[in-house]
Length: 317
Length: 248
Image (cartoon, rainbow over all chains, first blue to last red; front, side, top):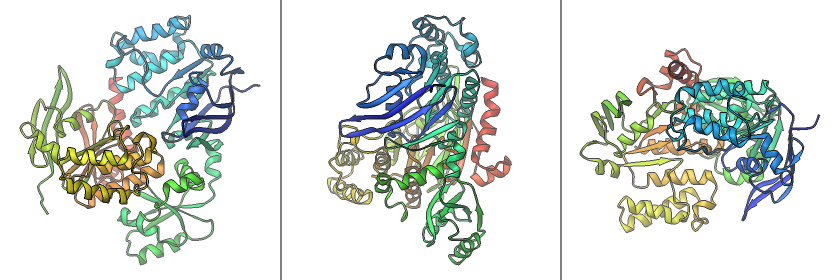
């Protein structure tokens, strides 16, 4: 079976800035594939190249076997693309926008209504409202409906949940799971690390390079360190003091706890507790935990050369 | 230490036509506290922040910010607060150096003070080498830290941070919170919105807006206990989801 997306050694520069550095990956048919990384990692550049809106400097990319440069017309017919910035017509109504996109692709709302029904029915009560006057969550649903109305084979969603609240984010991912069951390949990007767990496979991307590609489970399994979740009565002081523990590899805040990573078998929980009690901490709890994707991402970032430069000074803060 | 709250909001109502964006909000923010202002999209957070910053008038209610009245002393309020958001922060086509001096001047600092504070800030952020770089050419992480530093360059009583960490990498996000803590320890009250629920845990107190009203306001510990939740994400989902099912 051929892949839905194949990318080989793709590079793109903007002046001196290397947005993409020889990245390679493939996405299987029907896969839900996530690009996880912060702003400036190169996600949007990559999506624009795959959507045939931008030319790469070098490398090759195909979508459903079609080449992004030579076969761009064909690709445009079979993909749905939802850019990061809201790009529908603000002065057209909800329904006019959807009809416009259906018409462009030579179809009708009615013909593919089943595909978008679940998403579109939520905004249908507002179908005479201008798109520019919708709330953020509704805009997002309309944009997804418009990207789906021609029944694409591959859906590219560039940061669909950025700036969206936790509840709407969860709903959006539930929608993606259902679209996946309809056989649509979905390539999605996000800066939210917790969303990685919802993908079949993820690429962790930073500074134009892919640091790792695998299933979320494998990302966590590949974490090379041991990890403790540590709490005490004073979290701020705790973060500071844990840095001084000689065996500490890294210390990061995670909500109400500090995550302390260490070289495996280098230190035990009771040693950490003793150290903190001697430093004056009370109500100390130390628990061995599995890393989250965010722990893994930060570990990978620290491993890469450029990240070292950027994050220097981390340990003394 | 002055015990008077730095922000007092009593029965704040803001209507747009028949739509009630803020429906009788009442809360206080203490001096030096990190106050998390959470809520779903469209819950009315931005409307309230604009009023607190003196950019928009309330329909009704009694409000004082940094000791000033939001109806009659809006210019005073603007001089005594700092503001930063992901969308509006620095000028892309000015250098790092120029941005710092520009903001310091806007806030009315003297020439001497501008020189002194610019110098301190460049050293603190380790940007002396890069001072002539245009903002558009520096990494996002630097921009965010610089934008925050610039927002408090005039030692405001309160700084408003509207989703300051959206899209930044996880390490920079944590460094950013170190800066927030530092500002709070120096006596600056921090009023912050975020969609990252782990960041809600870093606040002294958190309010959660649902549908124009404050549905909950307490310390993260107390909120987790009250809603029998493992973390703030669960608290948020419980409160915001209950309302959502009604509207959509």
